[in-house]
Length: 276
Image 1 (cartoon, rainbow, N blue to C red):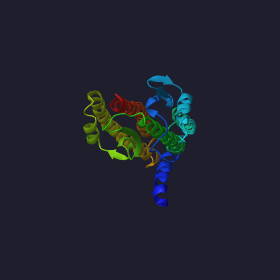
Image 2: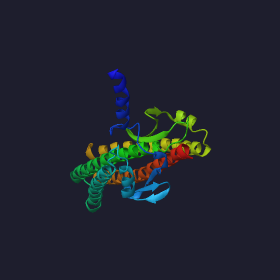
Image 3: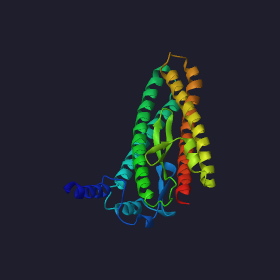
Image 4: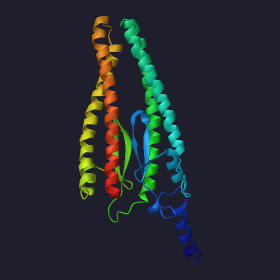
C-alpha cells in the first residue's frame, strides 16, 4: 500500500525536477517561439515570434522557467570568449602572411613562418571549439524550450544539431532523441511543400560543403609539404607557397559564409515544418 501511494509521487517529481527535459510547469503553448540566425563576425540575431530581440530578452524568457536551468547567458559568454580567441588566431595568421610579403621566401624563413601560422591556426581552432560547443548548447536550449510550444498533433517535432566530422561540421536532424537520415527527414516533412523544398536545398548545399572541406584539407597538406618538405629554391617556393596560402584563405572564407547560410536555411525549414 505504501508503494502504491509512493509511485505517483515519484513520477510527479521526475517530471518536474530541474534535470528533467520532459515537462515544464505552466502553459508554455502561450510563450513566444525563439528563433535565431547566425550572422557575419559571429553575430547572432534572436527573434521572439519573429520579432527581433536581444540576447538579454531571450535569457529573461528562458529564466522564467523556474524548473529548468538553461544557462543561456553563460553559454553566450563562452561563445564570446571563443570569438576573442579566434580573432587572436586570425591576427597571428595575418601577421605571418605579412611576414611572407616583407621577406624573401627562403628555406631559412619559411619554417618559422609555418610554425607561426600553425600557432595562429591552433588559436583559431581553440576559439572555434569553444564557439561550436556553446552554439550547440544554445541550440539545444532553444530546441527544448520551443518543443513545448509545439502543437503538431501526431506529426513529429524535428530539431537541429551540429556535430563535428572529419571534413568539417555537419548538420544533424533529430526526432526527439532519434537521429534521422536525410531521406527520413524528407519523408516526414513532405506534407509541407515549402519546408520540403528548402531541405532539399540544404542537402545539396551540404554536398557542396563536403567538396569544399575536402579541398581545404588537401590544400593544408600541400602547404605543409611545401613548407616542411625537402628544401627547394626560393623562387619555386614563391611560385607555390603564396598561391596555396591565398587559395586556402579564400576557401576558408567561402566555407564560413556558405555553411552559415546552410545552417540558417535548415533552421528556417524546420521552423516552417514545426509551426506553420
